[in-house]
Every structure is written in C-alpha cells, then in structure tokens.
Length: 243
Image (cartoon, rainbow, N blue to C red):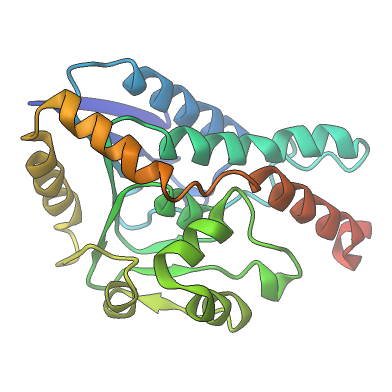
C-alpha cells in the first residue's frame, strides 16, 4: 500500500500520509512521495483546497532518525542532499496555489510540526499537540520552520516553544494562533474537510491570486537552506553523531 494517497471530491483533495507504523516519521521515501503529491495537486485546476492528514492517531513524529537513506555517516554531502528534501517538501506544500489545511490527530513533532506549519490552516484534535524539540536536542529548527513559527506566534513565543521544548496542546495552539479550529478527537479530518470546503466555495482565480498576494507579504523560505545546513552541521558536531 502506498504511503501517500489522494482523494478528490467537489474541489477538495484529501492527502493522507500513513506509513503504517514507525510513529509516521518522515523518511526520505515519505518526503519524496509527499513532494510528488504536492506537484500533482499544484497542476490540478479542479482542486481549490487540500487537506493533509497523517495516520488516524498520529500526524507525524518528525524526521526519521533511523532512515539510512537520510543519515549517511560516510558521506556528509549525501546527507546534506537528503536532508534538503525536507526543505523542498515544506516549500512544495507552502507554495501550493490551493488553500491547504493540516488535519492533526495526536502528535505533530519536529519536522511533522514544521510540515503542518507550511499549510495555511491547522485543525487539531482536542487531545492533539505540537512539539518542537530540536533546540533542546542541539539542533536548529530547519526546513523553513523557524520563520513560519515566528510569523505565526511572534518572536517571544517562538523562543519559548523552542527553548523550553513546550508541548503545545490544542488550547494553547489555538490561543497562540497555531490552530485555526479544534475538533473532538477522531473528528478532525471531517472538520478540516468542511473548513476546506468553505474555502473551495471561492472562485478559483480569485482564491489563488489572493493567497499568493498574502503569502508574498510573509516569505518564510528565503533562509530555509541556511537552517537546513545548520541542522546538518550541528548534527555532525554532536557527540551522538560520532558514535
């Protein structure tokens, strides 16, 4: 079964990413599949809104730290190229011309949370949470996540989330502007699809031009490559990487 599926209905596409285990972490194959899904939808003129969801009980635990395709300790350049796919992934989803909604059940951690931040809106289950543990682990937040986070919550709250490894539950995420709607656990996808349907009622051209105009005021990707390279360098310099 494919890790990524796409269902279309009345101008709304639902993209589900589900590895069937492994905490739904993002390995290189998953990144490539999600990039391909974004590319397919970007050229679909019949789709006006896209919902991205994960496994039924878990959005994503972030980057797969055990994927040998990502972590080539004998060739740092190969690792750099692989990690840069995460940057490409978040850029692809952030650049989609349609309105995008992340439907989050359970945890969205690290790179999983950054992918959710690349969407226009986020719907969280009542028991869902976001967590960004990178800095506590000795790594900067990469893939364009840092400017996206700061633009949504402001600099002080961004620092608090990153420096204290704060577990952002649904209520806090909503209060901080990271969640646009909260749904009962198990009802997130339906709620997110309804929200996407509201956006899909807009005429396609007006919707796409307006989204592009708004996004142009908050370009979060200019320095994404630097964050990814810093992530790699910190990883290579960490004692854990030497073992």
